[in-house]
Image (cartoon, rainbow, N blue to C red; front, top):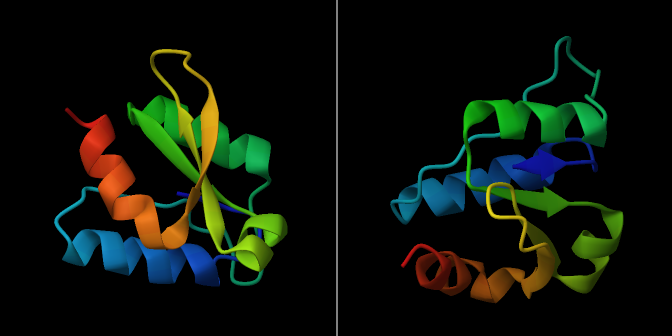
Length: 94
C-alpha cells in the first residue's frame, strides 16, 4: 500500500483488506510525522515481491478511488473505486 496522504488512509484500507483475508502491507514512516516519498514507497513495494501496489493520493481520496498498479507483468495501472477494490483484487488474482 502506497499512501501519499499521510498514512491514515492506508491504515484504514489495510485493515479492511486484511479482515477480508487479503495479504497486504504498507510502508511505515521512519520517525513519527515523517512520511516516505511515493518513489521510496514504490521501491519498497517492488523489493517486497508484491504483485500489486495500491496507491492512495489526495486525488484518489477526493474521488473515492485507489490506483492499482501491476508490479510484475508491466500491464500498467488502473483507477478502481474503493467500494470495488476487493472484487477487483479477487478477479486479478485468478
